[in-house]
Length: 200
Length: 139
Image 1 (tube, rainbow over the protein chains, first blue to last red):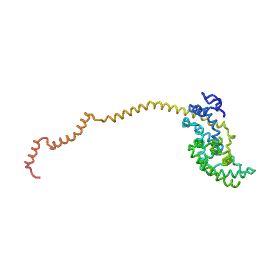
Image 2 (tube, rainbow over the protein chains, first blue to last red):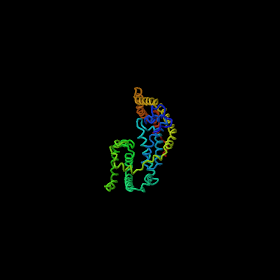
Image 3 (spheres, rainbow over the protein chains, first blue to last red):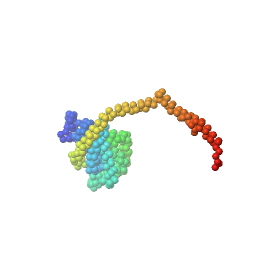
Image 4 (cartoon, helix red, strand yellow):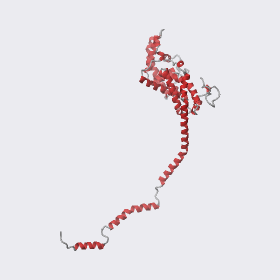
């Protein structure tokens, strides 16, 4: 991770590489009006934020827009980040909410786009038909999940968040997240069951 | 993120692998990270300046509130005391109330005594006599 050019993340930073400065310290610097400290927070978390937004939107430019808007919005509402609360789940929550809102608005404007990476997948040779069928079924099953469950699956299976982390991001209880995850995995397994039987 | 953190699921979990395989990987290499960072940070100074101004205004208001709240509390307490104890009847006030309360009765008695339209008995007698001794023509 790179530190902002020539910053050291602000005056009075703890000794050591800027990357070692904890988020909490940067957050306090931002509260004091330090733009460079916010720049460092953005640098640390924008890739993961983009990844989360992309999982939900499956469109690079839309995901970039959401990330940009989320970080700007977070800075505008920085005083709502409670003291002692970590920055990371807070910004991811803003990203997830922003992406979900964006997707809802987009689905009103136009039909759901074909994900960039899967557009050419169906034409791939060498036994790709089976993978393609698997993908299609899974994608259909994912699309059929309630929005909350789909988001939880994406955060858990694709982003690797724990149920506790997802609970923090989505503002739910850990138990609720686990329950949704269980339901979603059950639905996905059912969708894949015919293919698994064919394999036997 | 290790597998222990992923709720005890095994790395070979077929469903996890299938979901990953079916989902497009984010195109990290296609993103111009410096440009994205720059677009975000271009707005930061203005936002931070506004929030600092808002904080300063709030600090001033909070300082005034620190003085104003005790003054307001003292005023409210004084008003409450005045309302609570201002209505207690003192002996002189009681006398005034009683004078007011008895006034209609005294007036009524006086009016009853003066029921006659004549100022004195002589006038009334004179009228009576005049009526009795009337000898004028009948209409």
